[in-house]
Image (cartoon, rainbow, N blue to C red):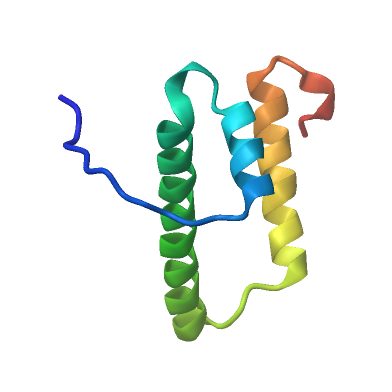
Length: 87
């Protein structure tokens, strides 16, 4: 079942609208904009969670971020069958 929709009027710079329209493909500009807004809401929610976690546990260091990126890279390499990058 599809979520109910409602028509809105928005204002945005013409160059952004033109670029979005060019990339929207068969789903159309409305679907493209709705997906972009949904991603932004997810990012906003994640940022709120990060703020809460950092307030409780302190900020994460760059070394911790890099270690997690390395783990993610290794996991992706293992999933793709590229064992030479995995530890």
